[in-house]
Amino acid sequence: MAEATYALVRFQEPGDSKARAGLLINDRVLPLDGDINSLIEHWDTTEVQLDALAASADADTGLPRAAVEILAPVEPAQVLQTGANYRKHVIDLAAAHREPGQVEEEVRVKTAAMMDKRAGQGTPYFFIGLPTAIASATDDLTLPAYSNSHDWELELAAVIGKTAFRVTPEEALEHVFGYTMVNDITTREYVFRKDMPAIGSDWYRAKNAPGFLPTGPLLVPAKFFGDPQDVQVILKLNGKAMQDESTQDMIFGVAKLVSEASQIMPLRPGDLVLTGSPAGNGQHWGRLLQDGDVMEGTITGLGTQLIHCKDETIESSKS
Image 1 (cartoon, rainbow, N blue to C red):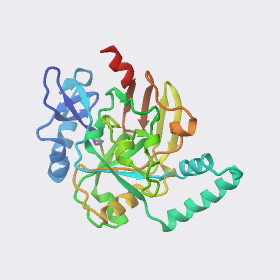
Image 2: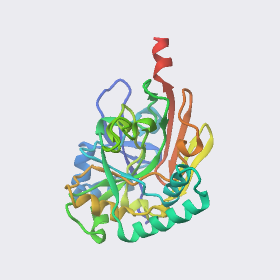
Image 3: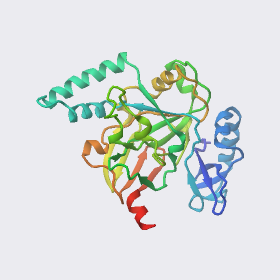
Image 4: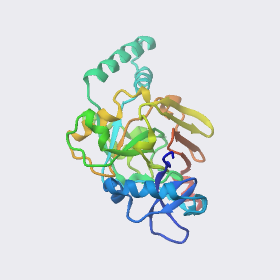
């Protein structure tokens, strides 16, 4: 008999403020005991139990998915984010920001050679995100009034399953529990400090507003997900595909990212490691997020995000 596949979710029932972990199978949510991080941390015992539960589930088991509110599927203590990790994305950025007089094709060729060298000899670029920025895959996104330069960046995220500290790339995937999807919203004008250029980037202001990390809806165990280096990342804005790229375009794969991140700090069960965003963000298109925009995000096997954008200034004027 084929193994029953499933995903993990977090959810709330109507009228109940308590968040619960659940097993999603055949569009039914089966409530589970324990919080999501405990299930992940003790996977050596919970895996067998959940496999058996999934195998015994029928059409009437649990709750209809439509009858509950699906929350972000993870509650990480740490969120590690990766910058400039898709080859085409970096080349596009270099071409867009080339100096006056530079020939675009020459910039592209030079940048491509740099990225190939970096893939073989370099290391990933990490920065830290705040767990408080996490929202669900359907929460409205409030666009803060302090800027009109908010952008999208859909990403595959690895969820750590067991503590990883100074692990090798060959060992790294053994420490990954599974995968989810994150839209890493960015306020472009805040990325670099104009008043202190020597300081460089300001990721705190650029990326950590409330709801700036729409996450989920699903947490898919690694054994059901397949090869993380061969899935498609697609973000549509108002029905038009803006990002549509394979994770094959990553400069550093998931194993390298987890390994390198673990060299500095221990990664704990439930932590998120974002893997970078492919080409096609709003800055590339010259079209940033506006009131009324709808973002639809999909990554192979990880469900669908549907995020409605609301301008804070307009919303405040209605109240």
